[in-house]
Image (cartoon, rainbow, N blue to C red; front, side, top):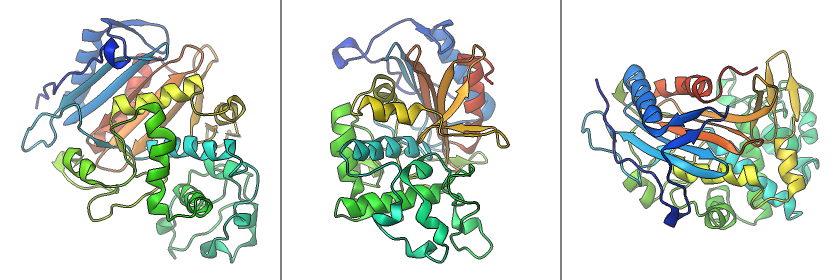
Length: 354
């Protein structure tokens, strides 16, 4: 099945973006817009992905933004400028950035045990939880599992002494979200309003939400599993609440604004931004190197690159950028097969990395 382009978006200078016919990739390679279009469409055909939203950043500017495909493989209605995708775990980077703003405000300390802000009854039976800090949560070194539901007894536990190893964990992010809700005298599901004020508005992110809303309901396209319209693990009308690990609904242009903010230091003190991008854990056994809310890899020339993937079964997403060149990309795809684009785009825009 051939997927055709939806509305093609190249943002104009009047909207703060740069129109260009050629783009510098992360590796410095010059690519034509047509070449990139054809490459993306080929991957969509090959992987049977109904829709893709993609943005490319060159020297801290969005120079390429495209939406390809259809909202639903059955109806074949084209996606448009307002079409939203489930961002999956790309939520973690956005939440980490917002949590670090709380560090800047002295509301939160990276290295103060979280139980001192808010005890956690679910894990109080294990005293080691009193060692867990914001830094550990954001670098996936808390010792928590990814999700307790994967444990045989479905109980939250600690896999290793906090701070000593790496284990990717959504549970840690949810604990930190509860702490921040407590510090803001609100409920976790109300944190969206704080993120909107602290991030969306100053960064002009107009097409993002971490909770289900009327706007999300009107603009969210359908996800696909095994080539069929299906529902994955993300939020929905039936499960509309805030999840720090995976509930963001967005599209490539909007998310690219967040990446530019990280690259250029908008909305964060330079010291805090440096903490986010510094290596916090180098777990050679698992070949994972992490900053705060962000994975770190090395290019062939030894430079650090920053990346993250997202997967909620029916949607996939990913980004990669360099702070040396302030170049990068972000994509969203409406299928389970879209996760393969992480490696494909990395090789295309960067080449093999270490």
